[in-house]
Image 1: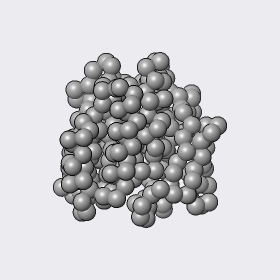
Image 2 (image 1 turned 90 degrees about the vertical axis):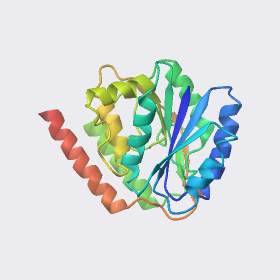
Image 3 (image 1 turned 45 degrees about the vertical axis):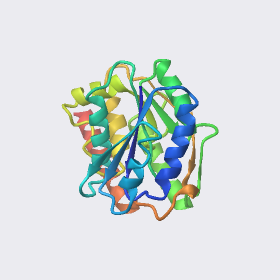
Length: 247
């Protein structure tokens, strides 16, 4: 079973396009799958639009009453899936704003089936790139990833911050157990790096990447990321992780 977790907040325009593309890609592969939409307290029609798809694709919706942030939303989805996952289950996380193309899902799933625990859709592999991001955002993203790769090297990983990933379900379950349920503590966008760094503490984690083109030009509306706040969270998380590892 493939479960695709979509964290969403006010994505009424982007979500239908993304769900239609997921249906087209996964249906043609003949895989069993479920789309788990985790609505983070949307104030538009996001939840109703998601529910309208549950007759055409296998889909569930979990809702937060108020907006809690990406970290809490990802954690809600992961815990729900991990709770009942089996040895064959694969979990995909991707953004719900249509900037991550579902076309990479099958390649990522096949990598998991070949024995990898984590597969990242990477902007920094040959063939990967970013379209629609400002020079400032590209520079900051590249700098943060170079810094993380220098301080916390993980074999096979260049893109530490991208949230488009495939996980072996049992490896995530092991990660929650190893960290006593606290695999995701960051509330913002830095949660994706936190998950990767914490999983890297597990014995013999096997990670790899596939090249991805990030289509930020397809995003409808302004970005929800607060760049300054996110940078500060990365600085705090890197410092904390470094101190923990040194101790």
